[in-house]
Length: 406
Ligand SMILES: Cc1ncc(COP(=O)(O)O)c(C=O)c1O
Image (cartoon, rainbow, N blue to C red; front, side, top):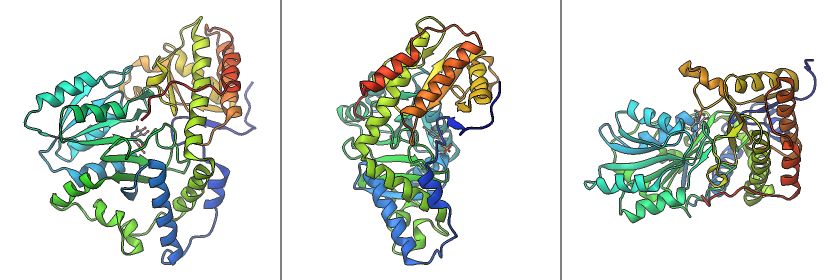
């Protein structure tokens, strides 16, 4: 039986569900972009984004997706021939590295595979071996959306400190921003990139680069950056148009304002906690299904798993079968697996991902889990019982997963 009525739930790991408040805020006529109120709107958004990021430092905002934020961070700091160390725990650090290489930056990559967090000893050894301090920066993802790995940024900061290495610490929080706890200044992260379409619950189109004084000083010493990507005027404009180097993304700003109001009303601590509780319920359900079947969490240890996204292994072709079934029969779209789709490797049909970022509550998670369980029954895929019982118990107990601090 197929159903086309009822509200569809897109549970992919970004773009995330857009709240009605955000949609309604955008549903208005275009403003006069020269109205001083527009400048006040942008200033307020900039300030509130810094609050959510836990930084008193600077923020440059771009009309761009995450790739644009990646490019902006690299373009402002490095020149062709500079070298950076990239720590990969999935797919996205490789993407950032490729972006850096396309700008002539040399990248050295330590790849920790698809099921592990960063091994600090390996980073320690690489930094120690770099006696000439050639690495200008260490680049890593806080959360890799492909694998659902959560990296311990505090541990990474400690490794840089322990080795007395002056490299910048640059973190991609595109998946984790507003979902997994991250406090930029407390972690002494030098540069952080984020985007608006995941934890920030706004349609795609805005990318953010947060940077501290150390990064700003390096930028000041660097040869010119193109006027569009240069973060200097964007972060401290003396004329409103300079926030965006031209026409501002008016309606995204209206939407983002509403989303930030929701986050600040709830309180960022509560937002992080809500994500932790919902992620724990999802993990409990998957463990229960896996107790008598092929399903398993890609990242087993709760402390190493994101609260924004969960990657699941079930064996090919059942990942795709489950996704197809819930999309056509239950009105739920799940994420494809591990970024392998491009590779034509049939194994990629053995994965799926659940995005649980942003505008999410108990009933959405339980409906989504119930839909997956229905698919398992309809498709005769072996699975253990008690998944919804485990999830509802976790929610009833307000249980959280064992996250690291950063
Ligand atoms: C961790 C991470 N980094 C970077 C990106 C790239 O962002 P975008 O697709 O907005 O360019 C994504 C997108 O999913 C991501 O999850």
